[in-house]
Image (cartoon, rainbow, N blue to C red; front, side, top):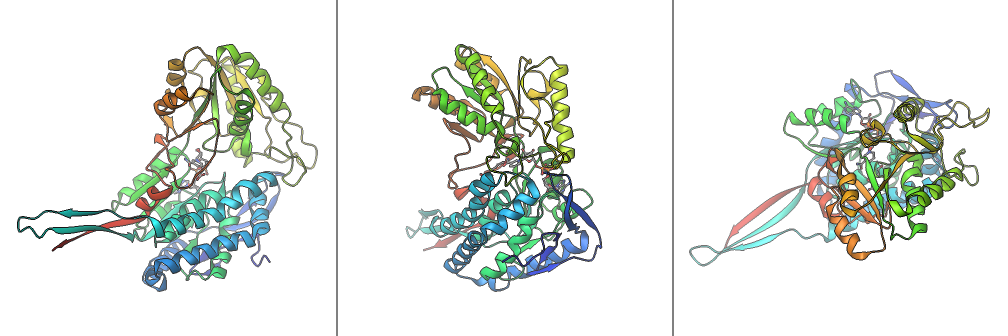
Amino acid sequence: MLKINLREAMHFIDGEYTAGSSGKTFDNVSPVTGRKIGIVHEGLRPEVDAAVSAARAALSGPWGYLPLAERAALLHAVADGITKRFDDFLEAEILDTGKPKSLASHVDIPRGAANFKVFADLVKNVPTESFMLDTPDGAGALNYGVRKPKGVIAVISPWNLPLLLMTWKVGPALASGNTVVVKPSEETPLTATLLGEVMNEAGIPKGVFNVVHGFGPDSAGAYLTEHPGVDAITFTGETRTGEVIMRSAAKGLRQVSMECGGKNAGIVFADCDMDKAIEGTMRSVFANCGQVCLGTERVYVERPIFDAFVARLKKEAEGLKLGAPEEAGTSLGPLISQEHREKVLSYFELAKKDGATIVTGGGVPDMGEELSGGAWVEPTIFTGLPESARIIREEVFGPVCHIAPFDTEEEAIRLANDTEYGLASAVWTEDLSRAHRVGRKIEAGIVWVNSWFLRDLRTAFGGSKQSGIGREGGVHGLEFYSELTNVCIKL
Ligand SMILES: NC(=O)c1ccc[n+]([C@@H]2O[C@H](COP(=O)([O-])OP(=O)(O)OC[C@H]3O[C@@H](n4cnc5c(N)ncnc54)[C@H](O)[C@@H]3O)[C@@H](O)[C@H]2O)c1
Ligand SMILES: O=C/C=C/C=C(\O)C(=O)O
C-alpha cells in the first residue's frame, strides 16, 4: 500500500512530493533504539515560498468554488483514506514516536480520521446569526452572517501526538474552506508526509494541503510563520515558542490560535471512587510516557486517603511494562529523544536536591542491549516537596508526578490554581455538588470530573493563562478558521 518512502521524508507541495532545493537533510532517529531510521528534507525559504504560493493559488482554484456538501464529502474521503491506510499510519507514527502500538491504534490514528469527519459534518450544520433591525421607515433591515474561509493557514504542530494534533487543526481549517501549510515537528515528520498521499487519493485539489519539514528558528517554522502570504497561524507547542510565533504574527496583524503547555493538577477527594481515581490518575500521569499536554503532573490528595492513594499508585506504576511498541503488554514507551530525556532527568535531579521522597522510579531503567540507546526513563512518583519546588512549578512532560496532601476543598482549589498555566484538571469525587462547585472554580480550559482525556470534539478546547489563547473544537474552531461577514439588507 505504502507508496512513499518512510526512510526519506519529503515535503508535500502542490500535490507533489519534493526534496526541495535546500539540499539540506537531517536524521530521523528512533526514540526506541537511538538509531537512525531515515532522513528528512529540511525546508527553507524557497520551500516555504512554494508551499504558501501553492496554498494561495488553490484558494482561487476548484477548492474555492466547491459547494459545501462536496467539500464535506471530500473530507469524509480523507477520513476514510486514513482508516483504509490504518496500518501505514500506525507504522509511521510508531517509527517516529516509539509509543506503544496499543496506544497509537486506540487514540492517535482513529482521532486522525475523526478530526476530518467531525468538522466536515459540523460545518454543514452550524447556523450563523441573523438579526432583524427596526428602522424609522418601518420597513426594517435584515442582518445575517456569512462564514468565509480565512485564507492560507499555517499549522505548526508538536511531536507528542503528531497525527492527532496536526489533523485537529487541518480538519476544521479545510472544512472551513481554507488551504493549509503544515510544519510538523522535526521529531515526527512521517504521518504528515503520509497524509499527502491520502489527500491525493481522496481527490483533494492540489495546493490545498501542503507540508514543509524543518526546525523552528532559522528554518521552515520561522519562515512559515513570518511569511506575509499566511493569513492566520494555529500553533500547538511550548508556551515560549508560542510567544515567538505571536511576535511573527503581529506583523500584518495576523490572528493566532495557541494551544500551549500545562502544569495540570489532579484533585482526589476522600469521597472518590478509589479504583476510578487510581485508574484515571495512572493514565493522566503516565500515558504516552507523560508526554500529553493535558497530563497530570501535580496530584493533590485529601489527607485521610493520602497514604493509601500513594501506596496504590506506586504499586500500579511499578506494574507498568516499559518496552518496544510492538511488544505484547507494553504500556510505556520511551521519551521522544535523548535531548528531552536530559531535560526530564534534570528535573528528577532537582527534585532530589530539593529533598523529595522518591516513592518509585527517579532514574533510567535497564532496557537491555537492543534498546540501550533509547530515551527510556522510569515511571516516577515524588512526594514531600514544598509548592515552590521547580518540579512543581514547571512543565516536565515526562512520566512523573508529585503527590501532596490537602485538608479542605478551598485549599485544594487554591493549590490547583497556583500556577501560571491553565490547561486542564482532573477532579475525583462522588459528591455531585462538590463536582460542580470545584469544576467551576478551577482556572483551566478543561476540567474533567471522574475521567481524563474524555474528548467530545464539539466542545471548546484550549487553555487559560499561559496555556493558550482562544478555543478550538466545535463551533469555536470554526470561528477561528473563518471570517464572518455581516450582510445588512435594508428592506
Ligand atoms: N495545549 C495543547 O493542546 C498542547 C498539545 C500538545 C502539546 N502541547 C505542548 O507542546 C509542548 C511539546 O511539544 P514540542 O516540544 O514539540 O513544542 P515546541 O514548541 O518545541 O515545538 C512545536 C512546533 O513549533 C515549531 N517551532 C519551534 N520554534 C519555532 C519558531 N521560532 N517559529 C516557528 N515554529 C517553531 C517546532 O519545530 C514544532 O513544529 C509541551 O509544552 C506541551 O504542553 C500543548
Ligand atoms: O498533548 C495534548 C493533547 C491535546 C489533545 C487535543 O488537542 C485533542 O484531543 O483535541
